[in-house]
Every structure is written in C-alpha cells, then in structure tokens.
Image (cartoon, rainbow, N blue to C red; front, side, top):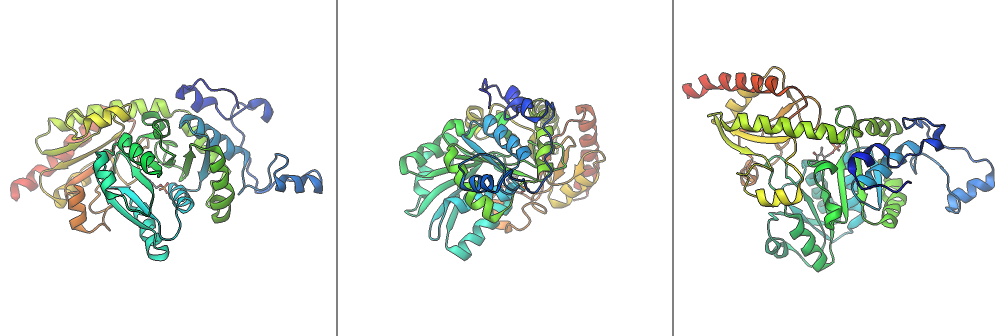
Length: 402
Ligand SMILES: *Cc1c(COP(=O)(O)O)cnc(C)c1O
C-alpha cells in the first residue's frame, strides 16, 4: 500500500488499491467468487500454512473486500480492519474476542438496542456481565468498574438523546486499569471523530449508515489499533463464526464511501439550517444536537467531534399522539429507522427503536413520548423546512383540543 498523506479526503478515494495490480481498472473490480484456485497442490499447502501469500477462500479474505478493509484502516488510523455482513456482526466479533465467561463489560448509558440484546444474551448464557453508566467524568467511570471488568464499550453520541461520552476520560481510566476500549463510531463516521487517534483500541461502524450513505447495503467494519490482533480476529471469530461481508456489498461500499466527506459536509450544513428552523418553532420543547451551544456537553462534543453531524433529536409539545400526527403529516420526509442516507428520515424512538426498553428506563434515558429523531438528508433545505412547517401546522389543532 502506498504511503498516505493522512488526509482523509484522499485516503478514502485511493488507499488500499493499486490499479496496476488489477489490469489498470480505475474502479475496484468486483471479485464475485467463493474460492480461488492454486497452481499446484504444493502452493495450496503453502497458502494454508501462511508461508506464501494469495487467496484461499472468500470467507478467509477476498480482494474486493480487502480493499475496503485497508481503506477503512487508513481513514480510521488503525493497524488493520475487518469487514462484516452487518454492524451487529462487527459488534459480536469484538465482544466475543475480548470476553470470556465471568468477565464484565462497562457500557455507556445508551447503546444500540441489538448490542444491548447481545450483552443480555452473553450474560444469560456465559455470565458475562455488563452495566450502563453515564460517562462524562473519570470519577463516574472509575466508580462503575468491577474487578472482572475487561473492557469499556461506548457509543457517542448516544442514540437518540445525543448524549456525549467523554472519550478522553474513558481512555484515561482504561489505560490506568489496563482495560480495552471499543467505540461504536457509526453516528459520527470517520469524517467527524477518530477514537483510535485518541487512544481507543477498537472502533466499529455500522457501514449501513454514513459510510455507505445510499441506503442499499447492510454491512459492518471493525478497525483495530494492532494489526496482529486484527489478524487473530480474522482467523478466529470472523473465520469460524463466518459473518463476513460479501464482495458485492464491499464493492457498493467502496463506491459509496468515496463521497463520504462531500456528503457529510452537506448533511451537516443542512442539519444546521433545520436546527435554526426548529429553534424558532414554538411547539418545539427540546432540541438535541452535539454542536449546538445549548447541548449540555457542548464542550466535550467540540473537543472530540470535528462537527455536529446530520442527526437531530427534538421534542414537541404533547406526547405520542402529537408526535405521530406530526410524522403522518410529513410528505417528503420518510418515516424510517436507519440513518445517513440521501433521503431525510424520521423515527419515533419510544415506539420504534426503543420500544422494547421499559418505559421507566426510557424516561431515565431521556426518551420521552414526543421525542423524534431526524436523519437529515441531502435534499434542498427549503423543501425540508416546508415539509416540517406543514407538519407543525397539522399538530396545532390537536393541542388546542387537549
Ligand atoms: C445501525 C447501528 C448498528 C447496527 O448495525 P447494522 O448494520 O444494522 O447491523 C450498531 N450501532 C449503531 C450506532 C447503529 O446505528
């Protein structure tokens, strides 16, 4: 691989790919193959022994997927990366790699619903404990550690409340106690936040979201500080559980990722215009956006995130009925979970992504009945604001009745 300048905009287009090795094809070729043939029986033996390079079988590595992995390692400043069939496959791989029966995982106060589900299952089956705590200061984190704690697993900003985890504090405590740090960086994308550069051990992404950015792939990527450890994960958890990414999905991702920086800039500038609109709307009772100066952890967000991203959560007057009326009155904005697509999406966490969380826990997490999350797309902001304004008008008669 060529030396990279360290500029993400360049690395995301060029790193990990040498056209001379692929018949001078400008685009990365799609190696849609399950297996690879060996010139001789002896060569097959050597490839299996690892004494010569070369491909063996696509679950162990595929040239198209490898370009994606090298590119991800470059843009997240890691020693190596692995691509998976979904974000959850990447989450499962790292948690299984880092823990054994009896261990404990310390988590941020909010984590992705299926990550929580996986941890519950690991607890039930293998007595691997976990707890969820606020992580704004080192004291808070230190207090929550147990003798069995082996890693700190965080997501920041936290979905859907946009609460920020103080990564410097997490990493300082982890270093002091010899713990590993895993950061789910899906919401920020490598364009806005690079936890490995700050000292985290692993970063993972649901590549389904901003990385791919076109709403047509489900995928995941795990990036690690240490190249050798990543090879270990490749030849243990990834190979034997087998939740690999298909060559075609890697090909689509390589195409989608080339514009990550361009898309993110527009997601952000659109989000800021929508934010200004929401701020002057009288029915809005709360707005949550990491780089808004009213955000309770604005200072931390400013320090660890280059910008605020494309997600805005907000509450309106009333409750679930008003939120649903609001969403049903939208015409262009789509009602859907997921995020990071060209289309603006809205979802209602209390009845959708966080429906399984008991109401008391939801309230403690700050997920009220009228909270909605917008994933701001790439449409013209005049059209976005017009759609939102019409939805606010539709809610007004309901509030007057009540
Ligand atoms: C979507 C998402 C995941 C899970 O990724 P999949 O690709 O759907 O498996 C994990 N973490 C976060 C923060 C997500 O948004």
